[in-house]
Structures are given as C-alpha cells and as structure tokens.
Amino acid sequence: MSGADRTPANAPDVCVIGAGPAGALCSHRLAERGHDVVILEAGPRFSFEDRPERMERTIRPGKDDRSVWDMGGERDAYVSTGPRPYPLNRSRVKGVGGTSLHWQGMVMRLHEADFKRGSRDGVAADWPLSYEDLRPYYAATERAFGVAGAADNPFAPPREEPYPLPAFPPSYSDSIFAEACEELEITTHSVGNARNSEPYDGRSACVGYGTCKPVCASGAKYDATVHVRKAEAAGARVIDRAPVQRLETDGEGRVTRAVYATPDGEHAQEARRFVIACGGIETPRLLLLSDSPNHPDGLANSSGLVGRYFTEHCFAGVGGRLNRRTRQKHVGFNTTESHQFYDLDGYNPIKLEFFNYAGPSPVETALSGDEWGDALLDSLRDAYGTHVTVGGLVGQLPRKENRVTLDRSTTDDHGNPVPDVRWSIGEHTKRTIRRANEIQRSILDELGATIEWTVGPENTGPAFHHMGTTRMGTDPASSVVNPELRTHDVENLHIASSSVFVTGGAMNPTLTIAALALKAADHVDTAL
Image (cartoon, rainbow, N blue to C red; front, side, top):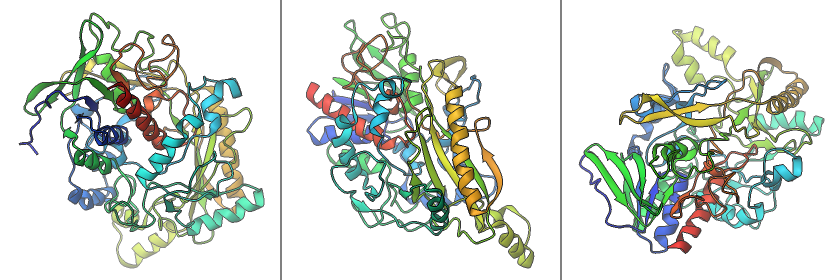
C-alpha cells in the first residue's frame, strides 16, 4: 500500500496510537458514538490472504516466530541490560492487529484478589479500582471477542452471564491428566478461548490448523483486525506504517500533535484528545521520547515512574514421556487448566496449564531431518505421540528496578533511541516457581511419566505479557494514570494498555487490557 494516503486527518476528536486490541476496541466504541477518530499504527496492514503462506513459515525448519510477521531489523531494535536477558522481539507484532495476530488466544478475567494484593497479602499495591468496577467491561469484551467457555471453574470470580460460545471439549491428553489430578485432588476445568467453537460474528469455527500461535490462517481466532474493520465502518480512519516519533504539547501542557513518520515523510496529527495504546514497552518509550522543556523527564512523568515496575508472567513447567499414546498436537491450544493454586497463602498466583501440544510435531520432525521411508517412520514413532507437559504461569511481584528506559547509544530506523528492557526476578517469585514445579512434578509422577526436563526459577522465561510501566493510581506521586486512564500530568492524554496494570496476577492479560480500553473509551467519550 505504498500509494496510500498517510497525510493527517482534518481535526479529529481523538487520535488513537496503536491498532492492537486496546486501540481497536477503544476506537470502535468512540467511532460508534459519533466521534471522529484517527488511528496511527506503526506497522503495515497485513493481507488476510497471505496467512496460509505465513502459516507455512511456522513449520519450516530454520524459521522462528519473528519471521512470520516480519519482525526484526533496525525498525525493531532494542537492548536488554538487566540481570536477565529479555527477548523482546520473540513475541510481538507491529502492524494493524498488533500482537493479537500472534497470540495464543487464551482469555480469562483477573481474580478479585488480584485487585487488592497490597491489602490482602501485604505485597505490591492495590489497584485503585475493583473487580466489580471492571465486571461489565469484562462481559462486553467477551462478547466482542466471541469467547468460548463454560461456567465450570469453581475458582473463577463471579459472572453475570454465560460465555458467548460453548467451550471447546477437553482434548485426549486432557483425559490422561484428569486421571492423575483426580487422584491428587486437583480440580481441573475448561479454558476461556477467544476462538470460535462455532461460527460467530461472521467468522468460521476453528478448523484445527494447530498453528494458533503465531498465526491463525482461518480467522476463527479473534484478532484486533476485527474491530479495526468495525471502527472503519463506523467512520474511523487508519493510517498504517506511521510510527509516532513524539507527542508535542502547548504552553498549557496539553498534547496538541502526534508527530509521525511515513514512507513519504514526516507529518503531524492534531486532535482534541489522544489515547496511547502501544503496549507495555512502546507506551513508556513514546512518553520518554516526548521530553521537552516543560517535560524534561518525558511526558506525564512528574512521578518519575514512566517505565518503572515492568512486570511479567514467568513460565514454569515440567515435561516428559509416557509409555502410552498422548495424541499430542491434535489440538493447537489449551483446553484444560487449574486455578486451584492461584491464591495460596505465602505465594504469588499460580495458573496450571495442561499442554495438549507438548513435544515436537510430526511435521517438524520430518522436515528437520534427512531420513526417508522406513527410517523416517521409525524416527516419527520414537519422537512423536508420547510427550506430556504441565506448564503454567506464575505471577511476578512488581519491582521498581524492573523498567523500560531509552538506550541513547542505539537508534532505530528513524534515529530514535531504542527501548532498554531491564528485567529481574525476586526471591518471592522464584519461591513460587519452585512450588509450581512441585505440583507439576507430582502430576507427572502420578502418571508414571519419565521426566525429561524442568523449567524452574533459574531457567524460567517470560510469557511476553508486558505490564506495569505506566501504572494506575490515585496519587500522582506514585502513579502515571488515574482510575479513568487519564494521565495525571496531561489533561487530554489517556492510556489504554497493559502498562497501566498495578499487578499482573497470573492470568493472560488481553481480556483485562480490552476491558480497560472500553473503560478508557467511556471516559474519553464523556470528556469530549
């Protein structure tokens, strides 16, 4: 789309920066209510017709997830100088749809306790809002996504209505895990999935390609292009390949323009109100890039907390082999979990996940070797079909020293300092990962599995859930945005992003991101 018109829109009400789930849902709600909305997206608009080719990339030897959505290079440069290297580009996408093009599609609400970890557990801080405040937005988001689920989770927070779609049935390997969990008195239940178990909202039911992450070729899994299209139908305009370089303010401290680059040159978009929806890394980066004489430490940063409290979910897992068939890879996403250990006293939240896609796929095994005929069949029989894994997410306590800053010695393709992601894990989180491993190992032991590997506190990695870098609060000295998602310092600047999370629990964050985006849209609507 090199000939696309990327000149600024004429005096819109709202400029939304970012076309992922938060930006798309916020823009759609505002456009539906009659506001003139323009969306600036750093990456391109990908063609849906190209998805089968992108899916093929996922199973070709020598490829990794970054190649599927064209990530990497100078545009996406970053550094990681913290105690633990942070592989930022492993799981993000720049383009219309954002990282939802790449995500697994598991969606669940935060628990009620997640909003009050400070007062309940004496760790971290409380959110300035409650589960009840977000409850109607959670329901609206589930309808928007088309979530498939069931009310069979005894540990979940209260619901007000059934899920829009029925849950996916348990996989064959789920039934194997269920045997062990029943013996160990571990309660299992279904998983909320933002993928169609039956046709919904003009999209087909899941057809089982199994490459959900990093690409759904059928469109059955929700991604933000759904609501980008709806926003456009309601009158919003999308400008792609338009990375915002900085936000400029007037003498009264209000944002007046978003300066953005395009293949044809630099432009400036004016608007009455601005919403940053760039995720937990690019949101603080943009604020820090927008320093000025009136904002010498970056925009909306009088607290000094922009970029601070970068928080993740840590992976914990135990895997091995059984002397029986598991039918691994027959389903490309999780259908069973357990939240039984989410609120253990003395530990961070733990969410257990039962993988029905453990071990190598037969396609990967066949394409990565040089065997043929009977030799290949023997290798496939040996390598495929007996793997089991119990994985899980462990919540990380926010740490002030974990942060996103600017590395001024390294620049991107427009000469801007790149983000420096500094990440570490505290002892409380490590202790919780060890506890998760104990539970996971007990399940595999009960099955009689031969344990082959463990991901524990020393070799854990991130779930690529970027949270906390512009945290929400009522005190401008200890937070960046207020409960209405408006920055304390800048009256016409709002943030719809995981960056506003105070704590992250152990639940995949997209449903909460989207719920907060709808809440932000309501407050922007009221302010206009």
